Length: 305
Image (cartoon, rainbow, N blue to C red):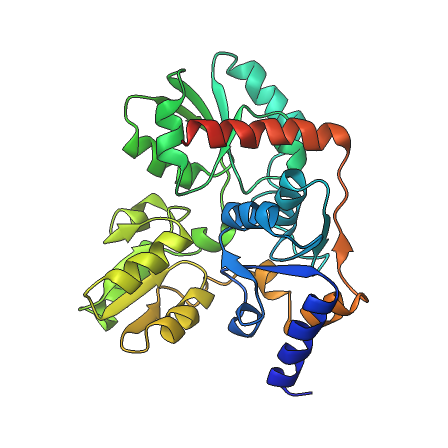
């Protein structure tokens, strides 16, 4: 079966079986082309809640599928590949977080949305990379315990200097592999290119960026900019997607090491088998986890207004 033939079958089967396909931006372009919605983790969850379909297929990683289930408990939620996890989401568990809360009892616990549903039950509010500065500013408490990404936390702290932050030694190992030496090499190769990076990157990398922001923010910046060349400092799939979206511009990966193996696990064949009903893991969460994790997300929505 050719790629286009498989894609056409997926399009037919998802309609026949009442399935909404959500695709994270880091998935491959052949999967993008069969999506109902493409975006970041939280944006996809909101789209799932609005979608009329009764079954949601998340082409991404586990915490994203869990967030979809929390916001759409009445729907059947499938994860396209059961092995697709997130190294950052697995860095901190509830037991360790409770120890930190005892250590910093007067701090508001702010969790990056890239965390497990169980961890969200023990947090006060979660944030996305795009919403974090606004939400943190709107928290009444001036003491913040931010988990788990210390690099993203440092970027937020610089934007909200009136707050006092505590961090843990956590973060995205994919973005952490990008070094300042890689920045120097990329700029030497492409001196006219703007540097666009995700704030999960190391501070010494983010500090050199012409733009730092979420994956969606990076893509929007590149599309609207008058510049013609860009170095992309996030998961390397974004380079290809931007090449499709802006064929008149040039895009270069900041580092060949910026590859998320968990995101790359899902294939078009996985999506095909999921809509056929022969693959995919159904996400099931306890009533307690859905209720308490939803509280954390609802607080984010309220503070982000």
